[in-house]
Image 1: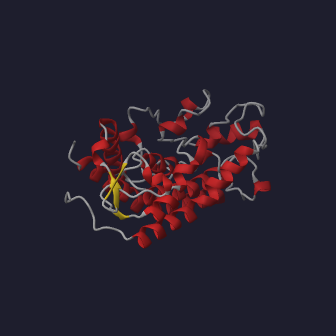
Image 2: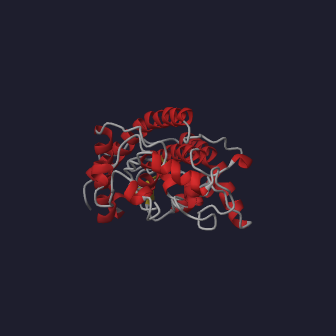
Image 3: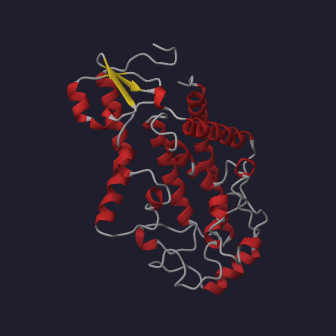
Length: 300
């Protein structure tokens, strides 16, 4: 066996991990599937399954990471049929991912993710954005034009516009900035572009930390499901703060607003933003290590 392989995991060990994994994420993935079957929407949680496009079924299905070896039998494979995926090699009562199926696209993605993680880890976090990106996305829109039309804004359009104009917008995240209204974009002190992502992203940014989930699932299946779940749950926490600090009134759904239009609310946002930034550090370190490990595998 290549030296990159780990000692085999017993059937009891890995099936317990698979069950634990499903328990961590099933609440969210199953609820989304049920809402979708009823043509219902959730302004907070759907984002994790629509903007991020990893399927709820794949999210629930535990996969080993590259280098892991599983002891398998007919019963365990029958209970986990997705492990018969083409990416898996099953021989002599063991299962592992087949590294010869890793293509150049996956290697390039691993390169990019490793560099992005390293850059963010080396860069000082900036804590002065106060979540204003969601406000900039509705700046000078009519109630009919806003994204979540079933929910009213907490401030009138005029008061909301005045508040945004009184603040210093400094969004560093391209995928948030690109949803700013045309009138809001010139108000931002940065003009982030897709090509400058490696230079702009920083560890206090809520969306950069939520995006750890995106970068993790882009390395599926090689990265394994445990780290994908870690990133998903971090993204769920980030999305919660994102929308509580937004101008939308989501109190009927149980979301107490973080009123960043007031000084006390901005202090609260900054404290919660810092907590999430600190939680993201070890997750980003693990993703960085996983991407390097994937990239270091010998080419077939």
